[in-house]
Image (cartoon, rainbow, N blue to C red):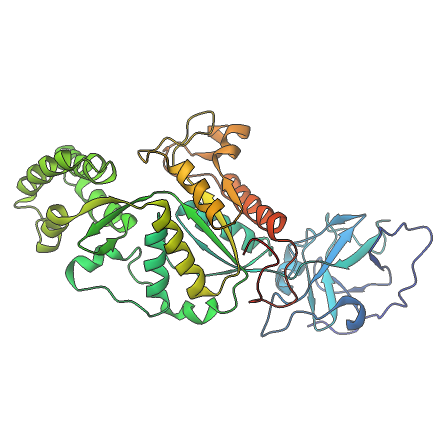
Amino acid sequence: MPKGLVFDNWGAKESQPIPEGHRPLHPPFARQQGHCFAIGVPGLLAGPSDTAADKRRSRLQLYEDGRPLGPRHSIYEDVVEHGGGRYNHFDSVVNFSASDNSDPARNGRAYTYRLVERTPKVLGVGGCHMNGAVRHLHNRRVIDVKGVGMGVAYSPLEGLRLVERLLGLRSEPEGIGRYAIATEAVDYALAPELDALDILMLEVTAHTDVLVGDLCLNRCAIITDFLNVALEHGDDLHGLAMQWYSNGLLKRNEEARAAAAAALLEALKGSDLDTEVNRQLVSEARGVRETVDEMAANTLAIQKLLGAPRLVVIYGPNVFFPDGRGMSWHSNLEADTRDLAARLKAPFVNIGELVRDKGVGYAVVEDMVHHTEPFMGDIGTAALAATFAHYGPLPPSSGQPASKGS
């Protein structure tokens, strides 16, 4: 870290109005490399700083003329190279940059700070929306995200199975078990990071599970490793596969499933998809509705395993009508997800409201499957805001019970 720091006398200048609850930072500042300036701050006033062992410990929020700067917890090299308001509070020193990379000692602006919520430790369980949302929050240093790379899960049961595998509590059988795992390799090294979580963000994209016996398959694995591969073999094979999957499994239409499965098994013959595992998948997989009671039990099981005292439930359809309604095969999914949140006394976020307010083009890219970065960032912001509005401030240390709604 830089040397030659200046410790100010902390006397407020009358010409610089200080917002209520703020403390001043004013020149002289020690110029560092690039866009970075530094000043020492007494720990009694600024609270504990970040350390090498806990890079999100500081609660110091820096302001420029009353507007928050950030991302906070930025690494020193990013403050130097990019500036733009980035800062960190490390070893009782604030390394910071002005919003426009000007000299903060000469730009005529007032720099202040106050202590805010500590950075919450968050795990997002859900689909692509959820992964994008927590990634945005983490990149803005708003949360300390856990479980990056753990894969996706569309229903509470899929989420439970994913967390159980991550914690080493579950292994899948050979063969058909490959379709129960959302990614090629679950990163089991993430398990120690899941201690003392503050918030569980659960996105519900489906309440139909795909089961072979009592084995819950992961729909992302089926899409990636079977349906998308079938597309490479031509429209006819892919069309049969989609009839089997969409009409038979997801819509839980047994007559349609049986007919499509018979035709699909015949069409697979002679192709590289004609394996024992895939024949078992097509023959034995069934779509099974997850009731609200079952969704609640699975969600509570995830919370118990992770020790996460705060839960936010997010309704996350993949495709939308212009008014924000989810375009989905899953009847009553929004109502069931809202009921799930109510039963668990958790805040509820409907991402369709963002689409209704800002338009489908804001949310969905041209392929009508994937979603825009601003949309995913706003999902994370809405989920975090709903969590704090419902439960109130975080306790001083993670892992403590929530103040309400728990």
